[in-house]
Length: 209
Image (cartoon, rainbow, N blue to C red; front, side, top):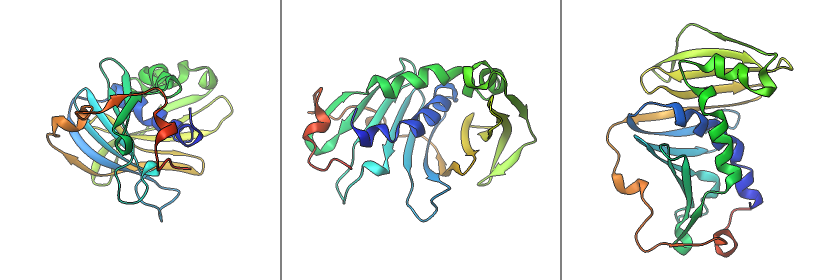
């Protein structure tokens, strides 16, 4: 997997783990790295029931549309789409596998049970806290530690059943500008005329560094 793609894997693992257990609503939002407030949105996300579209802004160069990911929750499969050369590829296994493993742990109803089942958290702690507003939306809070005592705080939107804010040491992020409502079905499909390739990133003219 190209280095620029690998650098985004941890963010996707966190988000898609939550996506796998989220509700069936349709909505869109932008994800912001709260440690870098001077930078634009890290990710744009579109949610259409079982279908999800992720647009990592780190992949965008200039005015041309950047690569994006289409993810199917029902099959837990995904594609990386590259408009620059009208092609697509299966999402690399390094990107998909972490999501499958974390799916149970990010469920809003069973978060603590899932957290404590993972190897790195077995000697940790987890507790549910009182609700708190996140950008004007009611959210359930959790505070958890791993086996080394490092603290992670997460907020789950009550209505969307989706993680909308997280803090872990100096790192953190949140979803902003959540817009509920039907999403165009076409944005979750591979565009017509695109061809599949195994070496798609090696031929993209504007590959992010």
